[in-house]
Length: 141
Image 1 (spheres, helix red, strand yellow):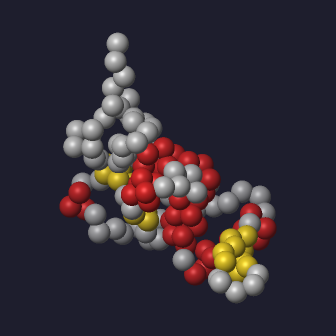
Image 2: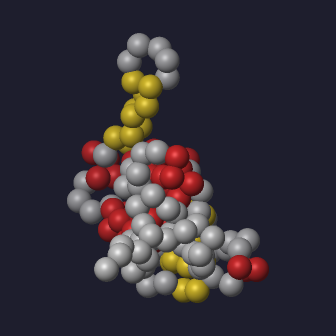
């Protein structure tokens, strides 16, 4: 018996539409990461991008549990001594789609393949998206 290894040109990519209204950020992000990696398919191969495209609408309606809106901190290095940091509430006011994108990014592989997978994630704050031509299928996550 041989192990099946998927080839990049054999994979048929689908487009999925996810409505994030009322969804918890971490739980939704983990389900999206599984779809982007392709782990939901029996043909999953670790070194090949076997995942689907994901379009997320209503990203401005995601929720955190507990006191995470005020206690969760996003930090980054600016090149100067010390770190910059903002709370989840401040980042959400500025760019609501970045909350979900960062959560998914941190669940994907940290290499070239992970960056390619993240490029298949399309997040929009409102209910409108420009991907009607791809006929995204509604996904319940």
